[in-house]
Amino acid sequence: MDTVSQAQRSANMRKVRQKNTKPEIVVRKLLHSMGYRFRLHRKDLAGKPDVVLPKYKVAVFVNGCFWHGHDCPRGKRPSTNTGFWEEKLSRNVERDRSNYENLESEGWRVAVVWECELKELREHALFSLLDSDMP
Image (cartoon, rainbow, N blue to C red; front, side):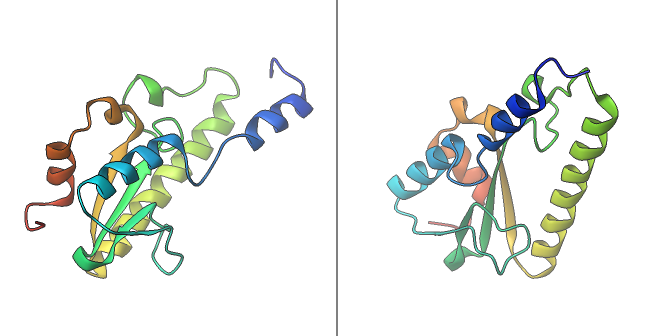
């Protein structure tokens, strides 16, 4: 049973952003400071990647650990309403996998930056995510 009212739960869920999240902005600022230019949320690509570097054919997804099923403490699944959350989060993980495979089959390289990695993210870490053939 949920510990808050349906109206309060609905209000809380409305506050969850899909675009321009804090982790996404951190990655964009880092990329921009490194001299990269990019596009945001291209609708013509599978999964609408958060950041797209067309010149290098790299799609960057900045994933929240909870919503995308990361294996870290932030990705812990709720202990209440487990059936709903298991199904919901499993669908998210499967959809992500499918989107990554579609992009790779079209010749794109996919980089995933997890929310929990941002504190330790430095330029060299981002370079390794994006690959070595970039300047």
